[in-house]
Image (cartoon, rainbow, N blue to C red; front, side):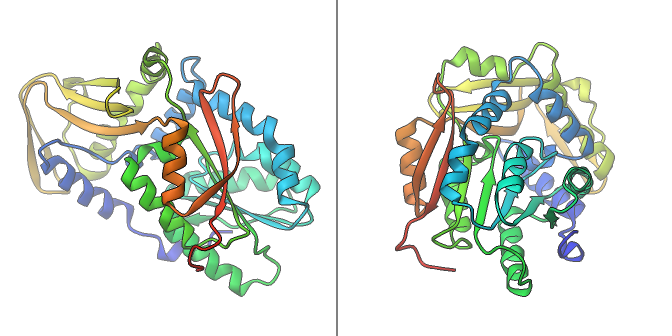
Length: 335
């Protein structure tokens, strides 16, 4: 079931507006949320299978190792599982299987901006879990939480206790101030007994990070180039993708991986849907993604400022990645 799909924002209009703004800025940029069309989502799944890309592998193992303790903390109650950016829901299944088997009642609310991926994920999950209540929301994350809260008020058989997941270190795509504001927005729509599980990539040796975002097969490069291909397909763009080069590196001072598309020559590119031509100098870049990496002290400061407190910290033995289980600080204003 899809909730309020008729209220879904117009992706193409938003895409055109943000591309026009981003390519007009001094440092040209495009939001990483536009990576995930059908082709981009498929390429990201391929990235997750590359040996250099440790994040998916380690996070999946942490989920498997921590599920029993998470179930103890939930305490056998009914639960509504909400996933921010579910993708193919592969890692979600690691929790859904035992949740569905051991809890009295489970509802699952995937929130994703990609309608195609959302529909596919729902179909696949219905085949595996015939009795699971699934309600998909095609929306941005905060708007999706608002819709879920409204939906819960209308449906008596939906568990009120929420278990919100934000996996894949997606929080790292926000700069620290944006991450704090985002988490603070999420906190507005949770109650004191709700739980949040957030995946965070930790600081580590630069060489490990650089390899993870520059895999030998070049899948990450294809993923990066696809954002130009998407402009060509959806916005009548005229990018010659061979005139750009994939650049990805760890910025030690800013604690982040940066992904760019660098122009190999002086060139101009027209985008028909925007009705404008954009100029690129040789060596000029389009900044397409940041992926911030955290130390545990910086991570603790971030969640505290957002009005959250850590219940458990599930990390791998080498402290490369962590899943933090959070709840709302009791004196935070209720929604």
